[in-house]
Image (cartoon, rainbow, N blue to C red):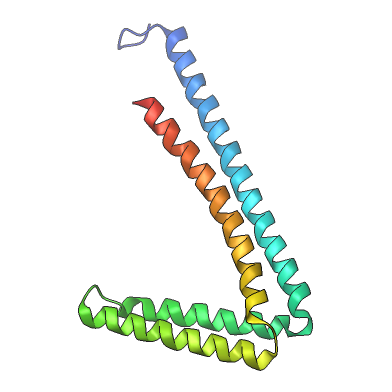
Length: 141
């Protein structure tokens, strides 16, 4: 027995159970990460096929947009003025994106359908993972 009055074999069994649980959780996390990588690779491949030679230009444009959004995020305070500036920023970004796509000479609706297809796959995978996590948490209590 240990100092708390718990038999050693029971204590070891509890430790082993916890280790098994952690290994299982890590394996499921790795599965999730791999599935999300597969979705990202599929999206990138289909996007490259659709855009062809314009792919690099498109990716560079969207990387600049992401960076601008990161920089602007701090300015969107939870105030009426912050909300207005966020709406203005989003409208400006949408107009710029539409103009960019138009100038590339590609069909924006086709591009949106590709993006939506992969976003839906992403949502489903994350939703299932979240659902499993929540059901396990509920089962513990």
